[in-house]
Length: 455
Image (cartoon, rainbow, N blue to C red; front, side, top):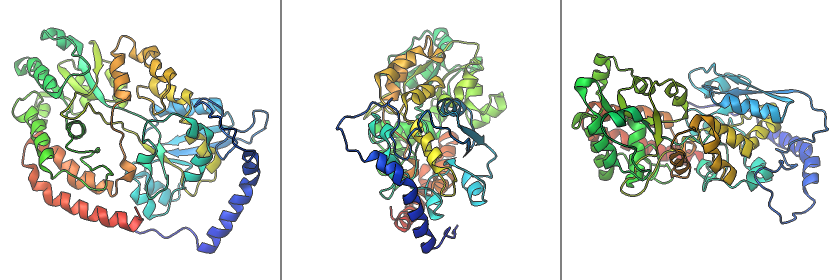
């Protein structure tokens, strides 16, 4: 799909001059020299573009329109932001037209967008504000002790079009009642994939309707390939997410191992068995029935999991041949170029790096991409995690690897033509090599797209 550019070059130059004039008072306030001191992550924002206006200044009310597929746990962040900056209200719209980019192209007002299909399609339409100059001037982001390579993993073409709005590491949920039923205890946090399999075998009793696991598909497999060193990045991608490595021999061994969970060891029901036995297709709904030992978990499942009538807990992802890895589902947030409230929109992005915002993320079941002793200790203070394996949460918070979907081009094609079919073959059985032509076709087109975008 091609998009017309928004304005001619002459208009862009005039707009740039207007923006520069508008920022002169702010820049003047920042030019008093660098004292050499580094403010703490919790310090008030700078007087740069994202600065918090003076508390005594009377501000006109502003409403930021956010386009997202689900407000859910993020509503607490929106509320916390409004509490800190009371003249700014966030209105989250979940009325998505089959893809958030379609809403923006259709002219829907938006000040912040959660990217739901990668970044490359937005770049083709020149639809997003470059956040690089905002970030460089923002003391809160600059001084925050961020997870290593966090912003870099979201940068493309030397620019920062988007940053993470969340840090959602995935872990294993365990039914502790089933552990007791089959004479097992919680494993140590450095358990392995073989431990995971052997425990699943012990808990599988199809006559009693008991299963070792449910829902171990693409995400579980992708995490295991990173743990084994077969893939360096999420979604079976190489280090810079430029090419799929789903057609390599090492990956094929991992695919076979996961296929065997269902088709050899039968510790997980097939899709047909789930249907025939009335096991819910949604993993967390199946888990709370009480007859599944393990499930791949994340914060968005916790609302359902808390309804369970049995005792449950959390384990970190198992150790692989190379490392103990998980995937941090770090969703991207961006500012559309058409936003009328860019300064206030970036203030929300800056706010995400505040310790109080990061604490709110932990309260809703996710993690923190800012590192601070206050945050590390906060897991044990959150009611949600009372009596749970808090050390597993801390370990997962510091574990490799962060999703770098913004750097991955043609994400919809990768999911639709490569990873989606792989997931089906993993569950249903079949030769993954039949998808090699699709992998090669994606890789060829990905190189062409990256070249066209200057990546």
